[in-house]
Length: 165
Image 1 (tube, helix red, strand yellow):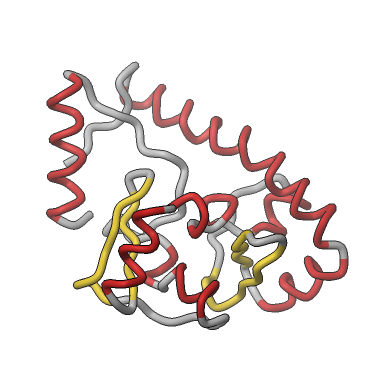
Image 2 (cartoon, helix red, strand yellow; image 1 turned 30 degrees about the vertical axis):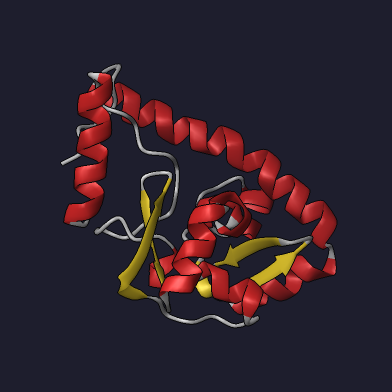
């Protein structure tokens, strides 16, 4: 987790007087979502571009990287529009296996103005064959999966959740 993200979390925790639980977003060991890929570029440029550590924004306790400051500003204005569905986990694993499997930001699609990641490009092809049904199932299954993660974190660290920092 970057120092900037830690400071935001600590400030929030101190202001509220308790420790917050993180949301269920697929992040690396540094708290970076989408493996550092620019989630705005998928929409604007229809391609996967690696972001830069110098152009970032936070959302749901995850740090997103962008290829430029303009994309970071767009994301900050509407993070829910750009953040990947299923927390960046593989949509097919959520839909078919009811499991959280990390998504690969190089295996992606936008369906009904929503960004989805997949474990591999074969999953993208299978998803697109029945996208409406699979997207609905993935989104339906993700909510209880995320709650299970939250409960496990809650049980491991007491009612306030894990300490951040």
